[in-house]
Length: 124
Image 1: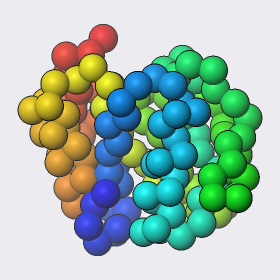
Image 2: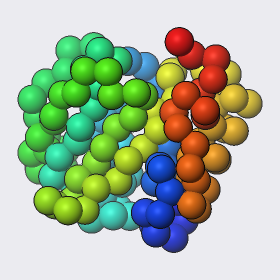
Image 3: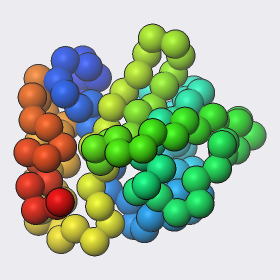
């Protein structure tokens, strides 16, 4: 995450999941983000990038709704309410450590203006 949470760049941070299994990966992300941002109410993600995407997931007793977007350009949105959204770059699981760290650092930079394609240029 961008340390000041200023929400002034293209991305507010990045996420590097270990797999494409959304039910295995998403709860840990929501738990970590909730500790810093507050209660997460909705997540929007690219249905084509994940296996078996449900309509909701329960984390720490809270039901979080999942919105599906085809071709979302390697991003995930996290909503705290109707007008408080954070956009994260999703670094594919098979990405090498060096490339993943570079992409995540750039996505978390204040006032970043890069696109997902700029940060992950080796992907189709």
